[in-house]
Image (cartoon, rainbow, N blue to C red; front, side, top):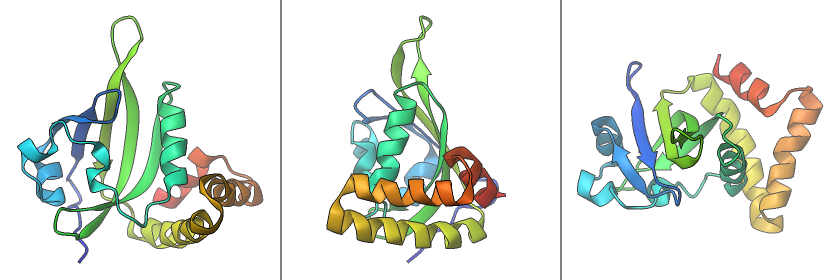
Length: 161
């Protein structure tokens, strides 16, 4: 069953350099269906949904490891196997010297029409990923960007509007 964020809800989480959760807000816990003690120290992938292309996470990690902000549509899975879509903003957390010390993510309700659009893209990417791997799945996205004449960021912003 699908769970949905309210219009004014924001999910907040922080992770260490390995992607283990170091902070999560109550909305995250409620939506994911986990208690705080189950989440703290757990890999953020605890909520990864099987329909989420690995290629999107590869792009995300490539960007944040270069201290670049990224927005992405993500489908997550709750503890009881419900699912929920988010529009995620992920950034690196830096110390006073500019060294990455962890990662910070704020997620909000995605535009419903964006989810309809992205579901089709992610399904195609997942089909390709199962047959040919993550790089081929990423190429589906890159080919779409080239066809549309948009950067990844431009596409995501246009879909969320």
